[in-house]
Length: 553
Image (tube, rainbow, N blue to C red; front, side):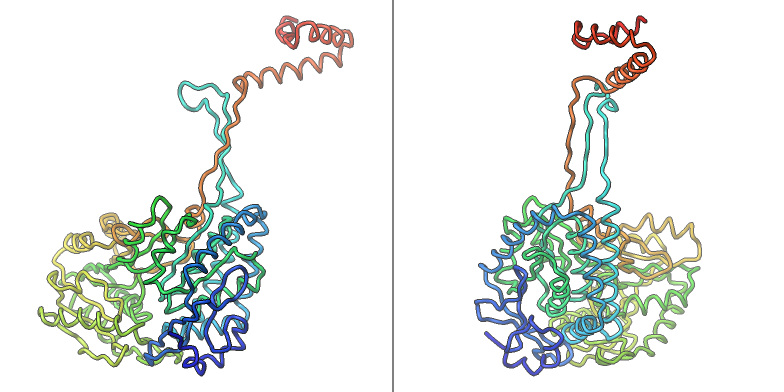
């Protein structure tokens, strides 16, 4: 179906900002071969505004043929891009970072984040600036990493002479398929394509439908910066029809995916023998010990659990509080929840916005209902209007309740009361997830011991889980993901080692001895002209074997 005409009124104000990436009916184009195009399918997909629950944007729906062409164009463009000097690749990333920070572009991207994923105003602008800074950092880090290689000699391994010299360097993988999520469509796209490009790869992006328009305008900044045609593509598709086609395409050399656990596992089972970089969510636990600063812990529960209405992979998903301090902690958290402001994302002081979809709101409600049915205490009372869910703390949660294990991805935080730190650690490690966790205590020795015992990719001490700064390693275990992210790790991940071995006719230390004797012989020739005649005659007669004769002199 085409809904472009219905959405025209919603994008009139953005037409000037987006220019060539929107057609006359208000449908956003896809990007391939260095150009903005409307799909030959003549179909479009609605992008629903979470607050109004009505279509706000429309994006073109690409065909299988158009997706295939994007991959083939990427293959050709990558060959030339890999030969582009590293410093020039870095210059291009610095350039696009500057374009993204231009007022008109930053405002256009931020406004789209507000409208299509209900990102709070202040957070939307922060995401754009953070993403531009990530590109600049990636450019510099890429030069540091990729300008270096390794040199090995063979005699360090038993049984070998020094007759092989090994040179190794990092070379690009080829084509990176980048699949970002709805909640950070700009930042988590940039975190994939920046490292890919500095390493010499081409990139094909499959943006989330909810978040596609923000992503498209960000890609427009790359287009305006003059990147080669075909190097970057952003194809908008019906995932149910072409998702598997993209992830199993034979030209894909690597997939970087951030999203749901089930989708990620499905991709990993079908993708074949290519590198996979995946972050699939978590059930990030906060363990609060008896000696913790409870004001600090409560503040971090609010910040970590309710920021962007809890729609973050690193949000606090469960609080494991020691029984002795649980009452006081819950009281402090409730007092801060009462101060949170619920409203539209356009308001700069809004804390709690609508969750991304009705399906998401329904799922959150089902978790709360299950907790109530099983005896949990609802501290604020359940309140929902459309996709807007009022912030909620659920006390006295037990392991029999779904919310003790499942990820709500909303403004709902369960509290479990534990008798010992071992009980908290056991619960954390029994989860199918293992993205992040945190521990609050004033005793650094306890903090380190708990951190070592918690089986998660990252453990924060006296702070809520968080992704970033963006150059920090970021990874999960178990169903939370595969591989590690962060600028440095992503650059390394999107390269492979290329080795060249120089085989010498004899051991290099013996060659060094010969070179020394050659230089010694040259000095003697200069000091004694008659010696030069002898050497010349000797060399001519002995075919280069005169060195032993010199040793006798």
